[in-house]
Image: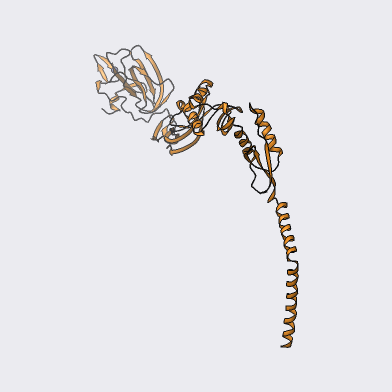
Length: 399
Ligand SMILES: [Zn+2]
């Protein structure tokens, strides 16, 4: 217990001595603390010295120094017809950070105090204010009405051409005009109206053609395997116009709605041999009007088939054109050499579609039925010759 008592007494003694020190010097410590705090806030800029400034009795705002406000008043006075008579009055004060009035606001207040300027919306071209109206909504309506004739349902913006600004500020009283006066000024100055239109149109994406080689088709033959389809896209354009006339057009986006499907063609790669197979087919479909053999005491070396002028005449077998031209009695006629001992003759044609030396295939259209040469009406005179001897064609082809 004794040991405990003595330790307790030591602690208690220290505590009592400290307490009496603070009691004795308390007012001094408070002064020092407050001074340090004030020093700290001024050094950090939280508080500083400034002024409440008045023009005559009109409060302009709170400023940090005199010079700027004095200069501002001088500039404004220069622009006014009658300089402001009132003087600036500065009242020092401690300002809390953020408590200053912006210079532009002070300048605006000076102008308002002058009574020669008031607030409104100005129409300024190249830095020079042409006129002002009281309400910014009036300025918007004015521009809206002036540009209206050039607007379409696609117009996204309509502005006047030039370096024109509309700003809310304080303007000299003499610049203020009524709505109709403002409208008249715009008309007299004939400002150009620049519009921007956003148009979305549907355009066709043309299908491509793909060709596939087909060895079962002759060279030059094309067979459409599938027609394909055109695609569609939505194209969005921005069109700039001056007074309604297009000055530029630019595509800004494209959206494919339907992809095109290519047309597919089969293209023949099989070369014509110019040689016959020995099997003959009918050159026309018409009926036989005169057969092979003796006719009125004269040898008829072929078969005559009925046909209309212009009707297609087809090669009876593959071969090479030996002759394509005109003869007094055969008229326009063609000889095909089948390179196997056989030749076929096609006479009285109205038209010839092949030429000497051309290789043709069986069934190919080589000419048209006619009545040229020694003929009494449109028909095809057809001959098959073996080693230059005329044979009865009907022994080779179907009736
Ligand atoms: Zn004949």
